[in-house]
Image (cartoon, rainbow, N blue to C red; front, top):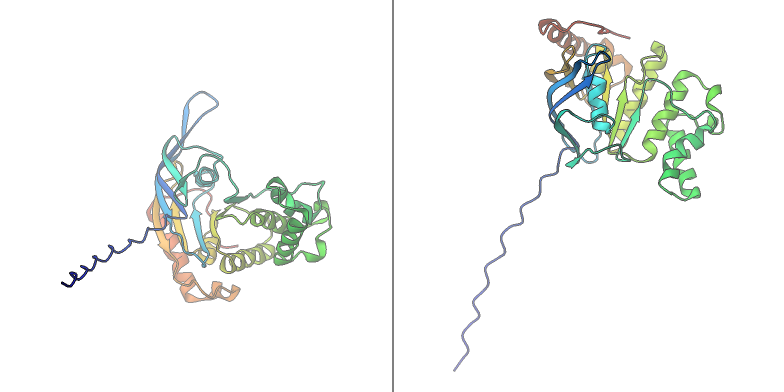
Length: 286
């Protein structure tokens, strides 16, 4: 008697792809500080935004608003330097509980260590991580070269111009290969020509590496030139007035500023600021 045929087993259910968490997510974030007179000062009110993870293609998101509106506070929430009074911040789905190597920050003020050469400034974070001397030297020199300072690798910060010092700060922030680069009005103290060069550098960094850049400015032209996405913020307490998706991603050379499409987006942003009653120190053009 022949044996019964084996009943074929049912195929396993298809594996459902897990959604990739956003690179940055703010969920109903509000921030209050205690004022000097004991009163409570509201800096940020109920801000929610997300920057999705797009592996292999850096994205630059600008927070645009008048000086003192609370946009730097939002950046510090993502950095883990300020904690929300309510709401939450996450990077790649993980709650932000303090500073970490997955986030690098560049401030407006120059932050180089005066007692370290350019190369050793860039190596600083790698030293803290215990990276071997030869490896950290190699990575630091690659970044010094990338920001155009190879011939100044052994120079002291006091011998550098303002723009060069910011290049050092950017290279040092990138050395840890952060998921998110946070930039708090980093070019505000620079002259227009140096500022344009630094903007082009950031675009180059963002396009060549898988970095998300979260950039704070009160300059409309700078926002339109740099951003893939602009979040327009109100006067303090900061709230999101509108999200603007900038249409020209690929080719952003300086000539773009003179084009009709650039002027159209710039005017659209200015109209939104005016219609929303956003007043304060907003700069138009550099």
